[in-house]
Image 1 (tube, one colour):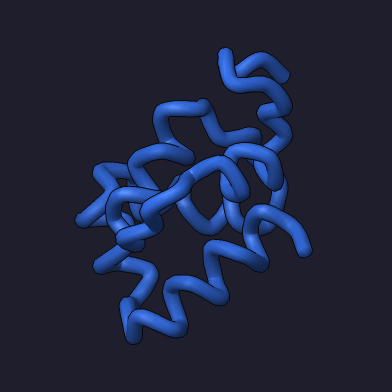
Image 2: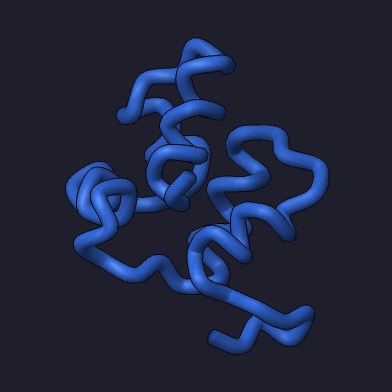
Length: 75
C-alpha cells in the first residue's frame, strides 16, 4: 500500500472529505491530491499533520509509507 492509498483509506473510514482533511491538517487543498497521487513528496511535518487530522495514534506507519525510514525522520 502506498502513502496516498493509506491516507485515502483512513480518510474514507472517517467519512472525511478531501477538503475537510486539508482544513484539519493545515495542508493546502490544491497540494493534498498531488501528495496522495505520489506526485509531491510530503514533508515529515505534513505527514504528522495528516496523522493528527486522521486521529492516527502511531504515525510510524504513515512516515514509513511516505519514505521516512528512521526515528530521526531521515529519508
